Image (cartoon, rainbow over all chains, first blue to last red; front, top):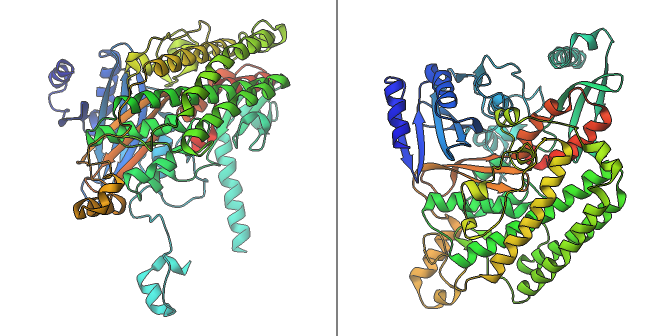
Length: 168
Length: 415
C-alpha cells in the first residue's frame, strides 16, 4: 500500500491533497478536477477494476461541507482504497466516473437523490429512490428526522415560533 | 385551476423522462411499452420494470426502484451505535444476520475491539445458516417463477427449521438482532448444538432431492442454459459480486479473499461456474449451500469455550450483579444506554460476503455517540443495475428467469 501511495504521489504531485490511514484503511483525498484522471490511472495501472461503492457524506458545520467517497476494490491484488473528494456547499458538483466504471451510474444517482451532489456529465441524472417531484435532499443534515415534536402547550404562537415545521 | 396546471406539468415531466428511457421506435409505436410491476409475483417485491418490447423480444428494460425506501440510512444518524443493529435486520430481510455481522464488524473496527473466539465461531455458524435460509428462499421463488411448484413448498419446509434455530437463540425467527458490537447478545442455549447437527444431517439429502428434480431436468435446462449471460468483464465493470460473479468463472469470495470473523480457520471451496448464465448461477448457489454445511460442521466441532462478549468495558456493559454494589458500574451502565460509546473520529468500510454478494457498511464517525453517516452497499441495488445488460435481446419469459436468478431483495435495494 505504501508503494502504491508513493507511485500515486510521483504520478500526480499536485493532485494528491492528503493521505489518511485509519484502522488499516487508506484514504486518498483528491480535488475534483483531478478525480477522473486519478481514477482512470488507478483502474488501468494499479488494477482497481471494481468500484465497490460510492457515497456522499455531509460534514456540516465544517467547510467544505460535502464529500464523496469512492470505495475501490482490486480483485487481483485483494486490496481496497478510498478516494475522497471534498466539495463546497455553494457548488456541490463533481465530474462523473461512469466513464471509468459504468456501474457508478446508479450510485451517483443515489448520491444526487439523497444528498444533492451534482455529477457533471452523468448520462441519466434523475432521482432514483424518491419520486421525481420530491423537493430537497433528505440525507442533508438540515432535514430533521422527526418533523414535529410533541408540544406540551396550546400556545400556537409559541409553538410556531419554535417549530416552523409544525405548521404543515 | 392550479391543480390542473400541476397535472400538466407532471405529464410533461414524465413524458420527457420517458424519452430518455426508451428508443425512438417506441415513440412511433413500432415497439410496445409494457409495465411490469410494481405488483408482480416474479419481481420478488415491489419492483417496477418498464419494458420496451418488439413482439416478445425485450429491446430495453428500465428498472424503477424506490417503492420500499424507508430512509434507514437517515434513521441511523439519530441512534446510538448499538441501537442501529435492529435497523440493519430490516435492510435485507432474508439474511438479517449477515447484515448484523457486517455492521458489528464495522463498529468493532471503529472502536478497535474484537469479539472473543467463541462469539466469532457462533457468528460464522449463524451467518452460514442465514446463507442457507436465504438460498432456500431463492431456490423456492426462482423455481416457482419457472413453474416448479413442488420445489417451492419443500424449500420453505426446510427454511422453517433454520428459523426455528434462530428462534432458539434469539427468541425471534426473522428479525433476530442477535449480534452486538463486541460479541453476541447472549450465549446460545444447550439445545443449539443438537438442533444444528440434526439439521446438518437432514439437509444434504434434501439438496440431493432438489438436484434430482432440477439439475438434469430438460425443462429446467431449456429455460436456464444460455439465458441472461453476463461476461467476466461486464460483471467487474458493473460491480456484480457474489454468486452472479462466481457464475462467470471468477473465484472471488470475500470469505476467502479478505477473511473476517475467523473464516480463515475453516476449510471450504469457492464453487465457480463458466458461462455466467442462469443455469450456472443455480449450480453455484447449490454448491455453495453444501460448502456452508461444511463450514458449519467444522465450526461446531471446534467451537471454543469462553465468553461471548468482549471484556472491553468501552462497549460491553458491566455484568448485572456488579450494579448492586458498584456505583461506578451503575453510572457506566447508564451512560452506555443513554449516550452510547464514543468512537474516535474517522471512517471505516467493512464488507462481508452476504448470500447476495458484497454487503458493505460505511460508517463515518464524528466522535460523538451517534454516527455522522452510515451507508450500506447493497448488492441487490448493484445487481438490478446490471439487469438490462442480461435481459436485452431475450424473451419476456426469460426476463422472469433472470430476475429470479440474480436473487434481489427490494428492501435492500431501496433501503
